[in-house]
Length: 392
Image 1 (tube, rainbow, N blue to C red):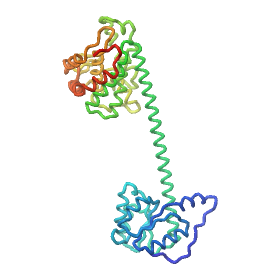
Image 2: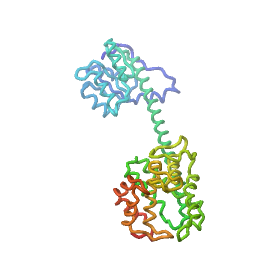
Image 3: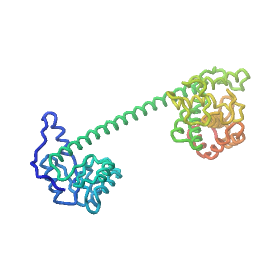
Image 4: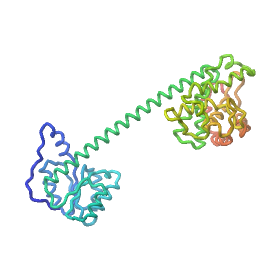
């Protein structure tokens, strides 16, 4: 590089508006890369006279990348024509580097080659100067590039702060939603005081089955919460039916079966037309809560049977929402393995035998296969969340 022998002058800025900017600019980290060490020293001297304080000179382009990574420059001033590694090659490395890829670069060259200039522009050069370079032009362009980077960094920082605030608010909303759902689930559980920790176990069992079926983690997490609302419709069932120690008669059973529709009506923010979601895990109406819609489908359909003999609508096979098919297995497994007012708990071995006997009739065969594949986890969850009176 060569500099024109022009007098060194500081840019004129009003004191009130420029003190902060000058302080930030003067502390900017600037890397100067040129194979001519004399030019590097000359440029450093002129920059220091212009108020720049933090300057790294590099004369070996081959070693430049390593030094730049350590220095973390705010701007790079680089010659294009260098032995070993040309400016274009070094610039290509910079743009591919995870740390330095967005570092502003000003290139200097005596070449008028149009293709070279186009190439460096394509690589995202912030500016370029032709040799010989006027010190004041160099100073002005450096300051402009540094200020632009400063504003960009501020914008990125603000965007990141906003993103953190948004994510924090989302977490707060999700926590609030979880609390509301669990309150609803507990309300239904308190109506039926013989079910103990039933809703927690059903949620956990359903999540285990969902994971075994290959559902995404976010869906597994959502279904664990949604499944806890499967019996929320029992809020609308009279106590004498919920707590009857013997079998229900036909009229009582008809009323008990209404809890599936009651559950849908309590939870669903949408019309009945969206009831049947089939196997679409992400099916949801714009503006609604996917988790609540999943909970509504579970509440409405977890008593449907694979063979079509269930209630309330007699759905069969894949017409039954997948989340409801999963919850059906979890719900029955928990009902079998825990005591109720009308029956004692069954041993876990017998519970699994009953599930297997209903494969392809009451339950989706694929869900039963998944259940047996994770039998140890199902049993561990039973023991972890068991009621005091439960037996294995």
